[in-house]
Image (cartoon, rainbow, N blue to C red; front, side):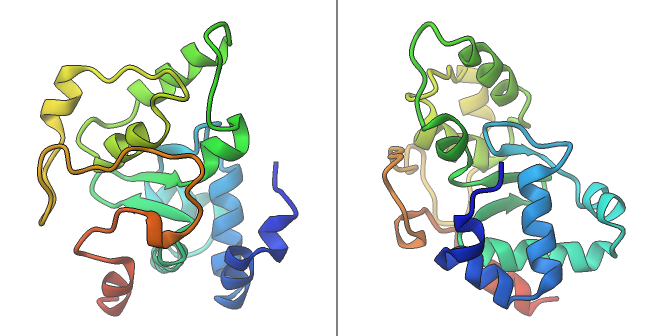
Length: 180
């Protein structure tokens, strides 16, 4: 479901101001046939380009612009997109012990490529609330990014709202946009 705040909120206005292709890609990320209720899923950019019938370079530029707003994070190596507030919007950030969606959430989480750092960031933010389990093998396979250390991911908090509260890699979306 697309909430009205997508059009009227600060992020939505920033996406609109970035142009129609950026806004189209943002809506696609919310409603893609590859998406799930967690808001974190594998999305090779050629899939999005084919679905939207726009050049892959335009999709990449739009994704990097959207990422710069804090709306998403995208791991180009693992081809994983994370709509940062997606699980909070769809689930409310937590599930009770008898909710059947726990099993579905675990399955979707387990299907993420173990090498993406977004998997660990998602787990830190939503793992407890969604009652997710993280295997030791997945922790060992997590690559280290420049400037990070084991255990450096901050604890998740569904009440965090702004990009200033989110972990930032040394290689920012703004820096990557300059390289295009």
